[in-house]
Image (cartoon, rainbow, N blue to C red):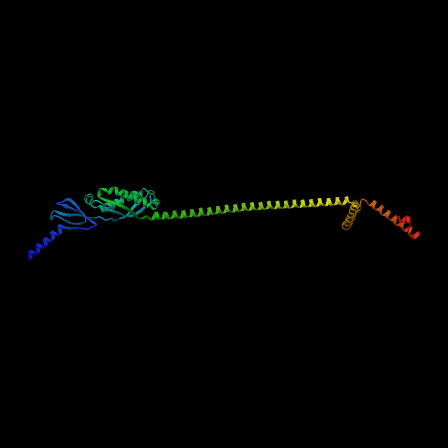
Length: 316
């Protein structure tokens, strides 16, 4: 019974060493007597006991590897700490097994050195603003160097770019100065725009006032012209009517009587309102006129007293 158990155990060990199942996500590198024999794809395989052995097992899926933080100096001499993630995939299990001892560690170290080199080509603000370009440059360099290892670098992602405390303090001062400058520029721009707006308003106001004054003067001149035209028409009409009246019988006598009447009215008004003595230039003629009127009155009175009634000759 004891020998049977030992035989079964030995047989089971031989079977386990001989029959293997490769998972779908992996690839096995087989060595025969210490020499590379083949790469086993996923599935069931039979090995020769004591001759074949599984030397390496490789993960065939995409593998993310963490790149530790690394101190870098930018082109403008700013110290920053950069870390990231590298994504790679085994493309050739044989070269990944024999081309390098540990492709994971080598990829991480290569990513660190490449990252320092690429960050050194950029200024600090470029490193923050152009992460995509930085990632692409690191991927190109790592992929070129890792091609003999049988792996493919798919992408690289920068996780954090952390400046040192001194750099942060300097950047804060720079940002504060930049904010102050922008505030001053904004205020100056606003003042400039306000001044322009005021000047344009004053200019427009002056234009409007001058246009209004021009229109007012045009209107006044038009009104005066119309007034003069109306007066001229009225005067012309009056002159025509006077001329027509003078041309009729008795018109000249009526005109003279009207002139005498207006003269007497104006003379009376001047005498009443004037504070100085007014002596007409035709005083002698007026006096002779009154004398003639007095003589006629005396003659008429004498005839009336003598005869009691005027004679036929007198009537005539």
